[in-house]
Each structure stands twice: as C-alpha cells, then as structure tokens.
Length: 102
Image 1: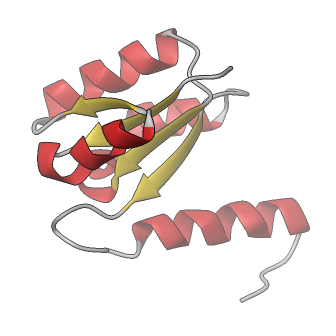
Image 2 (image 1 turned 135 degrees about the horizontal axis):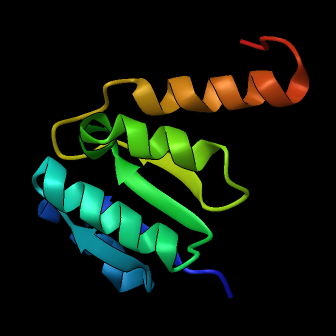
C-alpha cells in the first residue's frame, strides 16, 4: 500500500496521526523541504501539505507535479484557508477535462 503523509505546522497536522497517516511536523522552510524530499524519496503515494508549508517550498512542489507519484494536495492549516488549495484543484480539473468548469 502506498504511503500517505502530512506535512505542516505541528498543531495543524498532529491529528492526522490518529488516522494512521505519517505526520511530519515542520515549522521552517528547511524542515518542510527536508520532510518533503524524504517523503518523495520513500515513494509516497499522497502528500498532504498545509498551504503555509507549500508556500515555503514552491520549487519542490513544482518538481513533484511532473512525477507520476506522489499526488501533492494542499490543505488549510491553523492560519486558515488562503484559497491556494482550491485553486490547485481547479487547475488540475481544468487540465484533465480540457476546460474551466467553475
């Protein structure tokens, strides 16, 4: 079974451990980048990352978008929803369908 991981601020991601997901608390860009690279190296199937964490490592996330796995999904953190996650979902749907649906 493919690994599912969550990266972000400790208070934002800690609860995911109860669901059996691998949790990687990261507060700084360096911690976030190191966790992301380690998870990608382990061939994870899905990486959930807080919008704040994703904003710290855009170049790593962009590289991962061209790989078959992992799927990188942005989630809101404690600081709230910036809308970036939904924007990424809309882009993916538009790419898959061939036109904007919303």
